[in-house]
Every structure is written in structure tokens, then in C-alpha cells.
Length: 405
Ligand SMILES: Nc1nc2c(c(=O)[nH]1)N[C@H]1C(S)=C(S)[C@@H](COP(=O)(O)OP(=O)(O)OC[C@H]3O[C@@H](n4cnc5c(N)ncnc54)[C@H](O)[C@@H]3O)O[C@H]1N2
Ligand code: MOO
Image (tube, rainbow, N blue to C red; front, side, top):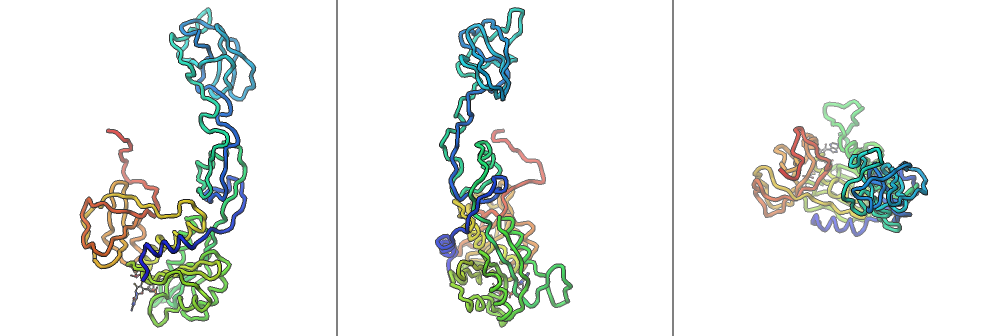
């Protein structure tokens, strides 16, 4: 049995990213950059005003100035500021030559003689300096960064139209099991609906892959092999079921007969012991157990790590959240046990009702903890490392959002 840590190390050492393509930045959302991008010019591109007001010299502090012209954002201007003569300026407009500061309009008074300025004027006040935000040549996107809305903002701010990104990993999902029917099919009393395949497809797509389902296989070698052969153009094949020691558990053998090189087979994890990872040519294969919660948990730990690597991410490792346990919890010792639970932003609560064969815990799970074999009790307030599944927390109640008070 392979220890969890070693299984993850094997994944990280062996799985390499997929091909790349060049996309318009607006189509690159969620993709991973396959090149560095550098700033092509300073931002701001020119010294400009941070306020609507008057561009003035410090020598005019406490005095009255004349101001005849106005510079608007977007205006090309050769106006100059001299002692006694300011220029009205709008936020974002190019600073006129000779100006030391911008005085916001509400800090001035219009008099018969002109504009009355405050007694003190600080050099540079309300001027946004050329290059203070981004300097020309600065790296704005790193190879391996995920393009989110904010990286896209930076690219757009530099007039960058296209970027080289990794292609979406293609994922083929099939399920093995004589007992399985799809949710849109008629189910007999002795059959069950296949919930794992829709789960893997949805989750792979959520994680930025392009996943397809090729159907359920019968529990025969021929049927499983036919499905595998037709899926070998994918970057990743995910299966569930048929990996244990039952008389109809042929999944692993079928892959092996088609030349699967095994990276690891059987992990020291509960649930999920039968989890197997390997490859045929350039196609990675994850055989997960049929039990739905076991399949989900092991998908999150192993398949997600493979996906991170295929996507070319420069931060492909799972990053846990360290938090406190909400309630005491008895643990069956002797195993690396994965427990499903919920993080409310302050503490992690292990679900009371959970088991490898259940689907209901999945609706309330947004994090996992892995408890080491020597532990038989976790106490309220103990620090735990939570593997977040979808960390975009919202609450049913309005919570305090302020750092202080
Ligand atoms: N004698 C032993 N029996 C079992 C062992 C063992 O070590 N010795 N391990 C148990 C563990 S742990 C697990 S996990 C399961 C793994 O079994 P398989 O991966 O071979 O899965 P199946 O037998 O095909 O199915 C298990 C269970 O899950 C249901 N299932 C399967 N596919 C789906 C699907 N796509 N959607 C929903 N549910 C699915 C299936 O009907 C079974 O109930 O083996 C234990 N046995
Ligand atoms: O290890 Mo099985 O995966 O308990 O459910």
C-alpha cells in the first residue's frame, strides 16, 4: 500500500502539462499561462490628476490664482502652469507642465479676483506619478499563473490582446458496473443510478477541464477494454468501481492488459484504499472506488492533483487551511482516515453522518481532514488542516466583516 504522501509525490514528479495554444485574453479566463507577460509601458502612462481641481504651483499657497483653461481626461494638452496661473483639471487628465500639486475643487473658493487656494500646498499632492502602479518591463503574469478576472484586468490595462495558455485537459469518464443506469434511464429494483460519472464530469469541468462521458461498461473484460481503447486520445481517464477484489472487479486488469504502467495501486487511505493511478502512453488513468463518497474524496486528493499538473499550474500542491475543530470527535484509529466536513470561516465541523457508500454527505461537504493512524479522539478547539474543496464561503447569517471591533 502506498502512503498518501508518496502517492502525491509520484503524481507531482510524473504528470506533465498538456499542449499550449494562444487565445484572446477574454477567452483565457480560468486557463493557466504558458508564458511570462511583461508590462509594455508604465502605468500610469503619464503624470495625471487624482482629483477634480486646480493644477497649481506651491508658490501660490494662500494666494489667489487665475484659471482660464480646463484639461479633461483624454485631452492632449500643452498648457502650462505658472505662478499666479493655474489650470482647472479633471481626474485622470494629463498634468500640465509646471504644476506642483492639484488642489481639489472643494478646498478652493471662487472669488471676484480668481481662485482662492489653501495656505499649505504639499508637493505632489493629488498627482499620480507615471509608473507608480506598474513599471515598464515589470513581470505581470508568470508562467503557470491561473488567469483570473484580476490578472485579466492587468493584461487589458497593458493593451495585451493574446496570451499563450495551456489547453484544457481532456477527461474521459466511464463507470463500470452491471448495476448502473444513467439518471435519464429506467432503473429496475435491483439496479442503481450512476452518480459517480456525473460527479466526475461536473467536478472536472468546474476545475477547468473538458470532460466527456462514454457510458457505463458491462462488468466484462471486453467491454471495459473497448471503453479504454476509445478513450486513449484523452489526457485523463477517470473510472470508478470494479477496483476491489470482487468476482466482477476487472477494471485494473483491463487497463493492465492494455499496457497501463502503474504509478501506484492501493493507497493507505480510508476510504479509498483501492485507488489506482497509472498511464497508457500519454493518457493518465485514475481508477477510483465505486463507493460514491470514497470516489469523491479520492478524486479531490489525487485526481485534482493530476489535473493541477496537467493544467501547468505553478502552484499545483493542495494548500490546506489551518483552523479549529468545532466539536469533539471520536476516530477509529489505525488508519489515515479522511473525514468530510464543513468550514464556516471560523471552525471546521466534521459531518456526523458519513460513510464511503453514501452520497448525502457530499451536499454539505466543503472540506476534508486527514487524521493520522495514532489519533483516536479529536477535541473541540484542536487545530486541524482542512483541504478545501470549494473555498468561496458564504453564510446564511450576516457576519462581522471588520478586522477591528
Ligand atoms: N473483500 C473485500 N471487499 C471489499 C474491499 C476489500 O478490501 N475486501 N474493499 C471495500 C472497499 S474499501 C471499497 S471502496 C469497495 C470498492 O469497490 P469497487 O471499487 O470495486 O466498486 P464496486 O464494487 O464496483 O462498487 C462499490 C459500491 O459503489 C457503488 N457504485 C459503483 N459505481 C457507482 C457509480 N458510478 N455511481 C454510484 N454508485 C456506484 C456500487 O453499486 C457498490 O455499492 O469495495 C469494498 N469491498
Ligand atoms: O476504502 Mo473504501 O474506498 O472504504 O470505501
